Every structure is written in C-alpha cells, then in structure tokens.
Image 1 (cartoon, rainbow, N blue to C red):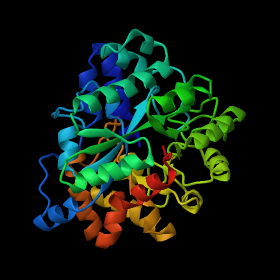
Image 2: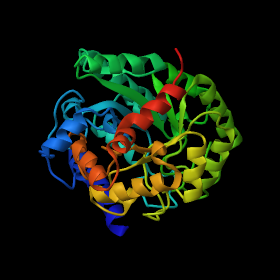
Image 3: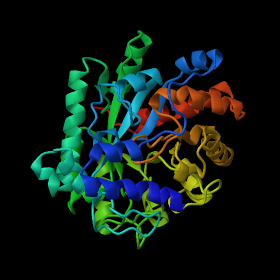
Image 4: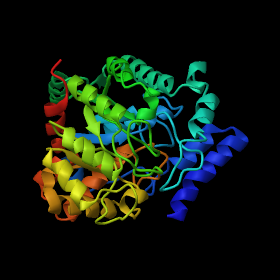
Length: 385
C-alpha cells in the first residue's frame, strides 16, 4: 500500500510547501475512469428508476461551490443529478494527520489546520476542530438555501417521505444528511453532540484516522474500545436518534457499540477483509455483528477499500458481504472527495449499476444495494421529528 500512502502524503507536503489547496484537491480527489460516462441505454434507463443513496462524501472540506459543476473532485449538485443520486451523506472532517499511514497514526501534526488557513476559513477554525465542524454545517446550510429546491435537509423521517414525493413528481431534488467523522471534533466534551445535532448532524462517526479520548480507531496506535466518555456519547447520540457510524472504528470499538445498540448501526464507507485485508476493513465477524443490528456495510469506490481500482473490485467486496449476511445489509459508501482516487465521480454511478448487473446481482438486488437498503435503515433510525 506504499503507493496509496504516497498519493496522500505528497500532495499534502506540496500543499504546505507551495500553499496551494486547489493543487492538493486536484491531486488527491482524482478518478480512474474519466468522465463523461456512457452507460448502455439499458443500464441508463434502469439506473434512472433507482433511489440512489451514497453514505459518505467529504465535499464540504474543499473550496468548491457545491452548486456549481467543477472540473475536478467528485461531488457537486450537477454531477449528483447526473448520477441520479437521491440522497448524499456529507461527512465532516476536522482533523487529518499530516503524514497519514494505513495504521498506527498519531493525533499530532494536522494537515487540516493548513488547509483551512489556505482556504480562508474563519479564524476560529484555525485552532478549534469543533468550530471546523460548525463551519462546514453552516456551508451546507447556505448551499441548501441557495439551491432554491435543488437540495433539501434530511434531519427526520418525514423528510425522507417529502424527498421521495418530490422526486416522484419529477423534481431533481437531492437530500443532504450531515455526518461527523471523528469525535476529536467534540474536543473532549460529549455534551457538544447536542450542539451539533441542533446544526443538523444526524450521523456520528466515532473515529477517523487516529484514536480519540472517546474511542479507538482501526488506524490508530492503541486501538482500544469505547472509553467512559465514549459510552456516554453513544448513549446521548442514540437518545437523540442519531445514526452510529462504525467506519474507521477499531474492532474493540465495534464490539462495544454493537453491544449498546438498540437499532441498526452502519459502517458508512470502507471494505471487507475477505477481499482486501487492510487495517480498517471489516472482518467477517464484524460484518455479521453489524448485520445482526439490522445495519449496513457501505462499500467504497477506492483502492484502500477494495485492493483494486475497478468497479469490479467494489462489486467483489459487495458480493462477499452479500454472500455472508445477505444483500439487504450491503450499501454504497463511495468516500467521494475523501482525499481518494475513486473509480468514477458522482455523475458516473450508472457504471456501478452496470458492474453490479454484470456481477450477477439481480435488478432487485441492485436496487437494494444502490439505495433501497439505506432507505430502510434511515426510515428506522432517524428521529421522528
């Protein structure tokens, strides 16, 4: 995986050296298959019938207007519309090691500090990870308002029904759901999750690339489970109706959360050890544990998740999970704009539909994987009001 590490580290070093956030964005968020995309007429027509839900994208981290088509990166409103995405989960990144590895990362030097300064974020975000989360939530809220109906908040179960009704009337509206990627953003205070909830956050990822004072990361040093603070946080989040995301979590953290969960939990983006044995991918036992809650395994479109650079590699990982626990627990978690080279951008998701069909999944299976399963879990887990 040295090649993967270098693709992440070198642009970050150049960002610091030359002070060019756009350069890092272009280099980090590439695609293997270049647009425009041309699925077969059969696939294109079938893809239009799907309710596509992607469980993770980090677009809010970058200095691109979500409403305007960009010539780089993966996600914006025009490309989401072209990909027939009905709902996009927007991850919020607040800390990232300057020299990230695939394992044993420390919470020390932080590339995000440099990135936010170069992108001229408000001064309070320079030193506060909580303020970075608040700022990204504000960015999304402003773009939803400016979209004039192109985007809509998803914060409760009724919003799902409103979204689907609008799309059934032919409106190209896309739901937007906020997710926190890592409890380091809470800066040691579990109670701050209430403030983020009020800003629209409805999904909580316990960790990102390093251990925190609340939970251990699969890519951290100690890889412990939930701390007392972490258990307090999870109870608080569950009481509020937040969805718990196990992506990046250590095995012990997964075990601790599954033991506490009274509803479905998810792993929003990643892969499975059965096809790609990397530090953060899920073991068969953890796939089964997540499925036992009624939850989801979100499979990514990038090499570290699938050990390959083709859509067929993603399908292979999805097939492994489906054969193990059933198609109803498999979902899409692209990791678009997550400092990753993905196979396609958001406008090319019909090609994944094609790859799933060619991989032996039925039309009903594909409809479930591309969004039906996520729709079921959101309807069960989001707060009533």
